[in-house]
Amino acid sequence: IAAEATRAHGSSITGAFDDASASLLRGIVLTDNRLMKVVRHLKPPGDVTVVVTGFKERKRPINVNELRRLASIYIDLFHWALNGEIWHAATVNGIMVAKALGYDRQLKAIGEALSNGALAAGVSGNGPSVFAVFKDGEEGPYVEYVNRQWGYLILARPVA
Image 1 (cartoon, rainbow, N blue to C red):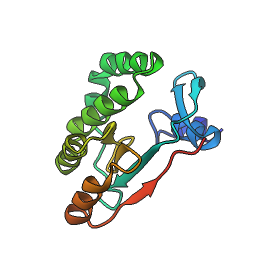
Image 2: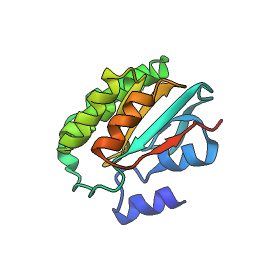
Image 3: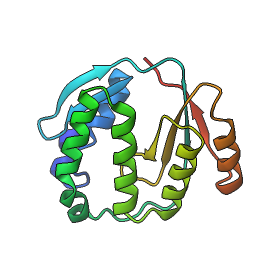
Image 4: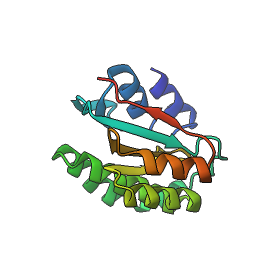
């Protein structure tokens, strides 16, 4: 109901149905936000650590037209995810959103995460937060980078 209300109000493009579904169901959730339907619900791997930073940054205005221009690529990424390429899809999506919305500092953090062995990294949602997924125990060098460059982070584990 909240997702429908935010879409009707115009305060959200998708109604955040994907976020609400992931919060409620836990794990990895692929949704069709237009139809407000969960397409696939996957158990997350139990051996990963997620590093999140950038959440104290100022959110940028969303250029809806810029994001819509990339719609066909987002559809391809959704199919990648459906076919098991979750980490690749999440990374390309996160880089595209960061670039489209002008999050240069976040792009640098994404590049740093990937060069330090992240399985996936990108802007979360429409930013400004950045996520990076690492195999347990491999996040150390990136955590040091984040502490130096941002000064704050959250370490999390997926919940199944």
